Amino acid sequence: MENSKNILDLQTKDNEIQIVKARLNEINDQLSDESSVSDASKIDDAIKLQFQNLSSKVRKLEGDNLSLLSQQKSVTTKIYGGAITSEKELAALQEELSSLESKIEGLEDSLLSAMVDYDRYQEGVKKSADNLSSVLENRKTLLESITKEKGRLERDMIDLQTNREKLQIEIPSTVYTTYERLRKSKDGLAVSIMRGERCSACNISVPNKIAQTIGTPDNISFCNSCQRILITDD
Image (cartoon, rainbow, N blue to C red; front, side, top):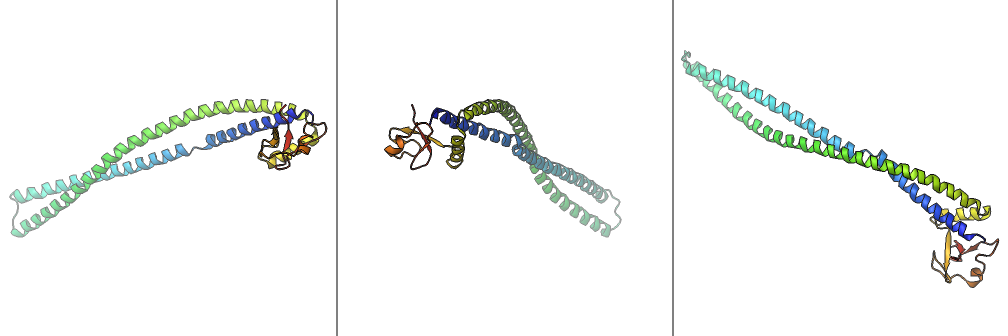
């Protein structure tokens, strides 16, 4: 086959094109993948919501506690204010006071527990906000980087396609058709170079009868083992 270097160069060019295409696909996936920001935002929203709920809970408990303390003060004032007129009234007030003290004790325990959670989530809100800010900054940096890379690769692709078209013109259509068929079935490696007496692709010895035909005009030689197009490296 005349000008066998052209078909080898075409294979090299096709491999370069595939590498660029694969990287462009990766970049497009990265550009559309907002999962890191979405996940960080969801976590941040969840922590903020929990913190808001705890804030409301703490305010309610504090309000309830103030109300009970006010009631306790009122009952205590009545008991020790000298306005009680009967033992029955005193007993009722003492019972009410005991009930209020019990409620206050339980409420203060709940308030203490809520305050512990409040402090913990307050720190969590800060950490979550810092994390979201970091994720957003990293995403911005990544987008700037891969957008520039994408532009460069797209320009490279135009040059590669142009050079490929020039190479294709130099290859007979029948040879090109065979090359394309093999490239698809052989994982992009349609052409193999003879290294000594062996096919460099499969490392199997090529019979002398086939080896003698490699490089002859109007002839395509194939490896008897892997069926790839054989060319010499000279």
